[in-house]
Length: 199
Image (cartoon, rainbow, N blue to C red):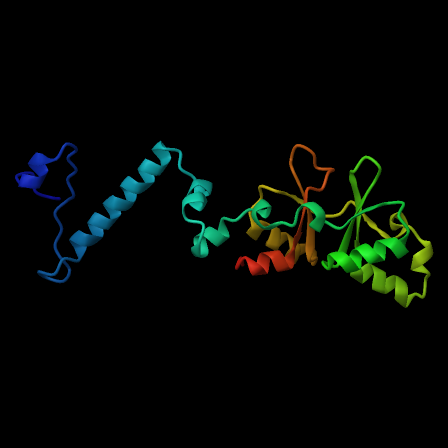
């Protein structure tokens, strides 16, 4: 309010004065309502900072809608558990191809005996080997895989993961916990992102 002699001002515990402004619409409240909105925004942001209320707190309270989707993390939408197509690096490709077919996401995550991720095999790689008429069945995963697959931290925003996929021209990412980057705890496929209405 802009009048110190008003009843509301005098009865208020915390008194805030807004400069008196000339309404751009004559008698219709216009400039004064804009000033009130600006004050409300300033109070809201100040309260957020005081309470240390961040974007992830907002996501917990408002998970739906466009803003909620933009705040989803990789962990929110990644594939986990038995949905991850793990294969040992010494597994022959005849067996590995069965796993690729059963998991239906077009990739295999290759691990060593210590369960550390050592590579990735995509259906595109397999097609290229077939075009060269090389006998895949007699090879092991280690021979076929691409070493050091591109990965992302589970706490990263899903929109960041999408940008990384676009930059690298890939459709899947290995997901790790920053405590152990060598262990894959999830897989993020481009379909997971699209189904979540992100981007």
